[in-house]
Length: 418
Image 1: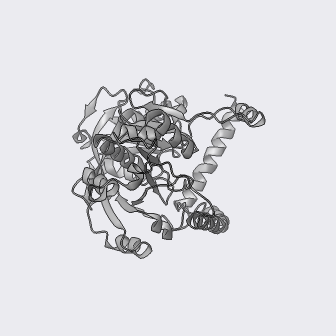
Image 2 (image 1 turned 45 degrees about the vertical axis):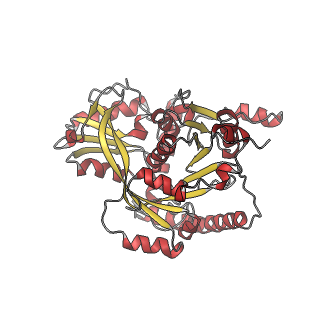
Image 3 (image 1 turned 90 degrees about the horizontal axis):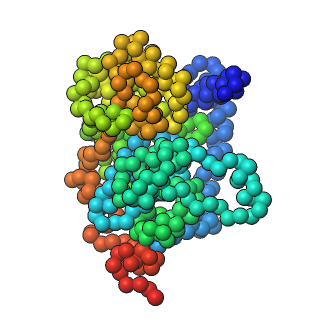
């Protein structure tokens, strides 16, 4: 990479970091305030467009496609930070263990795309779009994090027996999963804003520690949709709860969606794992340790607070943009800074760890924090929550039994319609 190109990338990243700080209200200087005014005007325009689009789908002016199987949409009103991936993983594992044939459909944010020339040639020659990327067929993981995206790869690695597909066109991906793998359950990862595929259930996740940011939509705030779109939820999952009362937030949710059932859950760290997966350490390792924490996630404060809550001091914290791909130079600098700060080891998130090589060249040990989901209220445990959400009363939804394509019906042991 030339010096000029490297300088250009550094300036671009600096601008991105500045805009993120403005959106999250982390900066309040004059430049941030004036930028916020401009973004506020764009935000009002975006909110109008979002409302119009949602209304068009609601009155069937725009049509969504049913695929004839159970479609569980897991998403949020905000940009990142709700702890969505562990919830998707837990849902998929529970449905798999109950005998469902599950496929997770993801858009593969920041995954490697075909070169522009290839896409242009395909458009000019009217060739059909390529099939979705199969990250995992349930038995084997075929793609790495660069090709699949960090979250789909992590899900594929952690979920044997679950299919994981990546494509921006989730209708196409769903049809492919039904046709080739005979799936009867589709989980749309981060799919709330993807309205072209008709969902059976919408599960909206709300981060209890920062539910709606500054309550403005993009680009001035973190909301993808206005708060009153909570009415789209079949269930609301309050994530990152600490078990203390959440009456005010619950009242606000019910003001926008009276009677919606709320399930409250916590993201509980379980252990520390080495990058190569060979070492597992209890969380007690954090007690009294000097830890260098680094992450490229939307809300790094939660991750850093986890470490402090378990007794670690953080002489060094480094925050990168969400889904950041670390360069060798950045990792070398990070390792040197951690040693200079007197850190005993480095800790990152699991999502970041999949973007790191096990032989990245760190002199200090590097671990990632493994999280699991615990239900605090709304169900006895996660399995009961899944049963209540997907199969209320123990009855499978009509879409699963009556509208299921023949290949999926066979996988259920049901008679074919032919």
